[in-house]
Amino acid sequence: MIDPKVSIRLARPSRDLAAMERFYVRGLGLEVLYRAEGGPEEHDLLMLGWREASWHLELVGGPNLSVWPTPTSEDLLVLYLSEPIGDTVVARLERAGGRRVTQGAYWDRWGVTVEDPDGYRLVLSSRPWSNAA
Image (cartoon, rainbow, N blue to C red; front, side, top):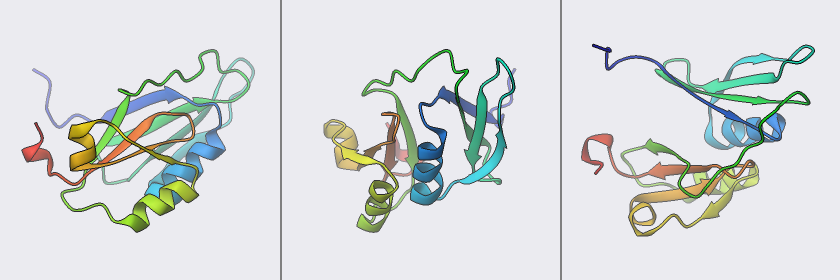
């Protein structure tokens, strides 16, 4: 049986690691956990998250990237904040390169959706995880 407290890494390609770092660090408040420049035939790597969290976001990019981001409107990273989403948070994400979008009746009712510079969607949900359905 797998322990339900396992750590999670969400990995995806990025067109512009610097733009993604601005969005997730300056805009959302994540920390840079690790960074590496790829050598010959390797991609660059950027890991973002909070040190105390059991998950982090791994972004790969650079000149040796073989797969480009192909996000859809259903590729969501949802953070359950359990509180109303303030306008200052959304404004900070937009200043950091994000774009507020609609995500359908459910998510628009329970949060705010912002596209990151690669086009992936970040949902800040006002609901707590225990009530999510």
